[in-house]
Amino acid sequence: MSSTNRTVVVTGIGATTPLGGDAASTWEGLVAGKSGVKPLEQEWAAEQAVRIAAPVAVEPSEVIPRPQARRLDRSAQFALIAAQEAWKDAGFTGKAGDDGSVDPDRLGAVIASGIGGVTTLLDQYDVLKEKGVRRVSPHTVPMLMPNGPSANVGLAVGARAGVHTPVSACASGAEAIGYAIEMIRTGRADVVVAGGTEAAIHPLPIAAFGNMMAMSKNNDDPQGASRPFDTARDGFVLGEGAGVLVLESAEHAERRGARVYAEAVGQGISADSHDIVQPEPEGRGISHALQNLLDRTDLDPAEIVHVNAHATSTPAGDIAELKALRKVFGDDTDHMAVSGTKSMTGHLLGGAGGVESVAAVLALYHRVAPPTINVENLDPEAEANADIVRGEARKLPVEGRIAALNDSFGFGGHNVVLAFRTV
Amino acid sequence: MAATQEEIVAGLAEIVNEIAGIPVEDVQLDKSFTDDLDVDSLSMVEVVVAAEERFDVKIPDEDVKNLKTVGDATDYILKHQA
Image (cartoon, rainbow over all chains, first blue to last red):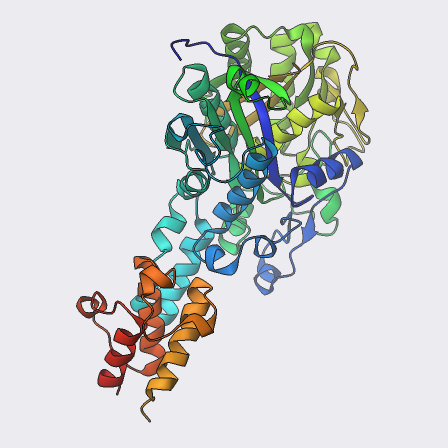
C-alpha cells in the first residue's frame, strides 16, 4: 500500500447500450457492424429537426424492480445495470465485505455523466407546472444530482474508499476511468468500479444539441446517419446507456485469482483552451494529451495496434483527432486500426468513455477491432492520417503484447486518452 | 362520502405497493412503514401525498412524524377526512 505506482488491471466489464443489454451482446453487435440508431417515434419528436437517436436495446424497467427504478434517474439505472454486471463479472458477489474478497474501505466507485439527471429535472418541472408544489417527488434531488449514478453504484457494492464524479461533458466517462486508475495506482483503493452513463433522449437536449448544429439531421436514413470519417458526415446521433469497468490493482487481482482482461496502463489528459465547443482544428490539445500519456506511462507506440476513436461524426472533430494521432505517433500510426464505434452506438456523451473503454478492452481480449460502419466515401484527410477499420471487423495481431487507446473529448475542450494493454 | 377503515387500509396498501413494492396483503394495521414496509423518510412523503389525494385529507408535515404504523395513518385519515 506504500507503493504509489502500482499496476492496474481490468477484471470486470459491464454495459447496457443501444446494441445490447450487456457487454457480451454489445460486443457482438459491434463486431457485426450493427447500428443501434432508430427513428424517434414519440409524439414530441414530430416537431424536432432531429428525429433519430440510439435508445438502449433493453429497457431498464425489464431489469430493475419498479420500486427501486422509480427512485433512480434513467442514467443511474443504466449505471447500476452495467456496474452490477461488471461486479459479478469480476467474481464479486453481494456487497464488499460480504464474502471477504474486497475490503469496503479499499473499494471505490467513480461513475460520471455529462449532463446528470436531466430527464428527472425536466419531468419534475413539468409536474411542478401541471400539478403543483406538493406533487414534486421527494426523490428529485438524489435523482437529478450528477453524482447520483456514482453514489448509487457505490451503495450497491458497498464502496467506502471514495465515490467520485468527474464532469467534463463527453469526456466524463473516460475521465472517471482515469480517475479510478489513479486511485489504485497511488494506493487509495484496491478495487474501483468506474465508467460513464448518460440518459438524455428528451425533447430539450435534442432541441438544444440540434440548434447547435451538432447533430445529424439525416432523419431519412437513421442507421446511416452516424458516419464518422465519411465525407457526408453531418453531426452526431444521440445515444444512451452506460459502460463500466472493474479496475483493480494487479496484486489484489492476483491474490484472489481473478481473470484479467487487460492492463489499464494509464491516461493522458489535457485541455484545448481554444473554444467552448469547437475542437481545435489541428488537434493540438489532443496531441498534448497523447504526449502526456506517453510521458507518464511505459506505453510503447510500437505496441499500439488499435484506437477506439472519439469520432462523433462531426465534420471538424473527426479529422482533428486523426491529425493528432499522426503528429504524435508518426509512422507508428500506420499499424493502428482506428475504429469509430459511435457509427453503431451513437454518441453516449458522458457514457461514451465507459462504453468505448469496454469496447477497447474487449478488442484486446478478443484481438479484434470493431468496424466503423457507414463509411462510403472516406474523407481524404482521414485516409491521409490514419488506417480506418471500415465496413467489417478486423483481426488484430494474434501474438505478442498489444495495446489499445480510447480517446474521449468533451465540450469545454477536455481531452482524455486511456490506454489498455494485453497481459 | 367518507371512507371506512377497511377502505383506507386497502387504499394505503395499494399506495405502499406502488411505492415500495410490498404485496398488498402484507400492509396491515400493526405494520410500521419504516421497519416492516420498506418505506423510508423520502418515500413516506410520497405515501402521504398519495394518501392526501386519494382520501381528500390534508396531512401537515408536522403530523407525518406521528404516523408510524398503517394503523396510525388510518386513524388520522378517518378523523381528518373531509
